[in-house]
Image: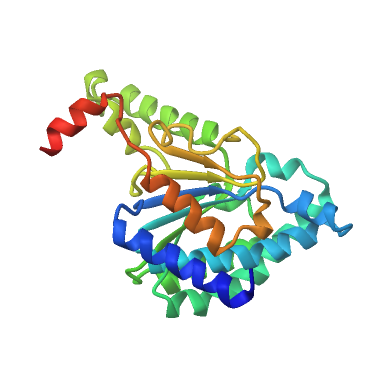
Length: 261
């Protein structure tokens, strides 16, 4: 397929998605495969991370154009700190460089920036630049880009439990006050709706300590494509696949049909 034909096919798929209209409000992505992408090309792992930035840029723009409200990217987990020191240092430098380079483009595209995780774990320059970017973009009203940085879902859940336990010990709440909604209000994502769709690239069949509480009824889409090769076509295919799903939330199809009638 030629370049013009490929562009036309992408435009046709995008228009079909918009015509169907059932676009997920919140998409979360486990961006996996950067290292293997680089290895397959006999490059250093950091080359995969650099190319992955181009995928981020393209998907963020497309998500905004589709009317998606939240895009959460698993950027750096707490477990990633255990990687070789040289790779971690390169990743932090790349994060700092990317924040500074992209903030004005994000502003022009009306993108708001949020983070979840332990932002204070980041090196000081990366942390300060991230906070500055969040401040610059805070009044934007389009896509909310959520970066999971130094993030661990188990850690998030434990933090919520500790917070609630302290309130109970201080007699600020009753045990009966604790329900699903109350618990969710103590998570990093308290102001963010649960994901409608989780995309994982590179073909791995696990969720890697990512949004364990929030993914209870999220639709999951796995592709063998490595993240640096995941671009508009692949993202649109994932959205289109989501549109063909029936989200039952524990009910049966007949109940959903009766409710719509």
